Image 1 (cartoon, rainbow, N blue to C red):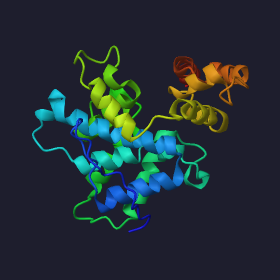
Image 2 (tube, rainbow, N blue to C red):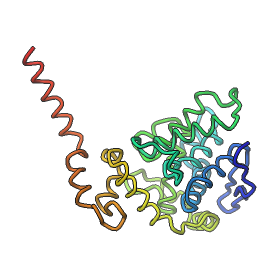
Image 3 (cartoon, rainbow, N blue to C red):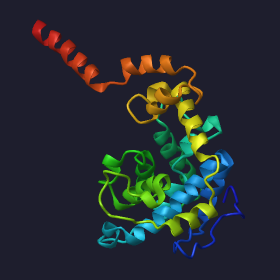
Length: 264
């Protein structure tokens, strides 16, 4: 097994009643994540795993499933969900959204770790791919398989903690207690995450702007510019104004096609 990880954080969190399962694949995935991303990203992924495991214990839909949840698929998906933020640039594409980069990197990594093909068929690998590719798209993720939804919810919960779910996303009330939140954040501190997030997202706007125009990443470029401090903000906004609006492009295409139809 590549990337041995003797420091794998499998210790239980008793108050939250979660333990990240220690398996050859979770160990290898944690080590791979640690080798290629920042500590702030690693801790975000570990917190998100804990929140996913906590939420599947208590969200109503999780308790009413016909088939048991594939917990290992959820854990691996969430551990690897931000490989699209890798510091190792050779892992990344030049033309693909970071979520799809992450999904592709995770699938390539997992298929190279000696997975039991009988246990890890195409469906389970697709679950991991979908969970990662859709983790920032709630309007789709929550309608996919329960594992995809659980991964999305756990990742989202790391941004809201005791205030999860965010406004406008249901009326479940307090799902995560302040005490549970504190326990998870103490185990995997949030230090540097917000500033790192701004730098990563602005880097995507700078280096792969075309992958940001149809999604929330462009909001970072519009707010913080190319360097996280405002530089290039107006240039990015000007390009976004041209390429970031879907409806005008659709209508332009329809109008051009109409000319062809009229000439037929």
